[in-house]
Image (tube, rainbow, N blue to C red; front, side):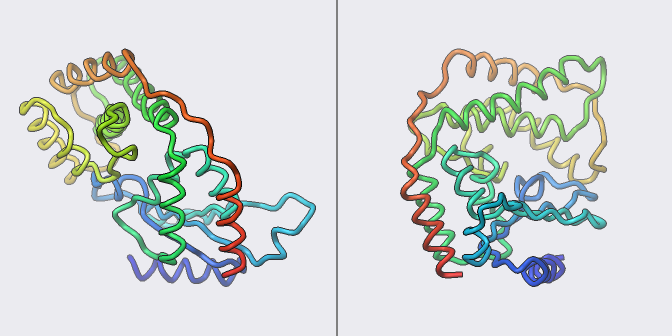
Length: 255
């Protein structure tokens, strides 16, 4: 599959006339809770030649390939990515910290990571993860008997990420890999064991499989939401545009 992904990235460069700077796995394969029929969710950042950025007209800033079989691949233009980075966009931050990287211009990845670290707003991350977890939590509470197994994992991941971001003693960006996030989170041994059992179960079941509600996890999550609602990180002012503009200029010139 990796060779197919790399070949697709090369075709995209040729077909769209762009230079792909960074490409990674996102979603369930990056998080580490894969089902036998999980898609490959490949995301990338690309740059056009200089003339593209000198047009008066608004230019398309995404490349979206049709999903073929189990390969879902799309990317963002560099200018779009930098604008979202300035706002601490969680999806982009997770791309940069993905444990599965297919392609990288190392100097660019380093510069973008440094800029992300300098500009990261804990409050923006917290509200994103709290909102995502809350949406799934409402759906779980409405379920009479069974819920999709993957919903528990999506909810656990985002809830643990929100709790992580609330802790000023931890790095601002939570681990993307769920196993690493779980290992660095304090929790009751019974809750941890229950999550482990569900991880084993998910690895052997289809993506849309449902299970009965798990009381141990429901109680853990209810407590987690109470903690989230009691406090949130302080908002920080956005970084000036200058360093983002400079990385855009440097990258376009180097392409």
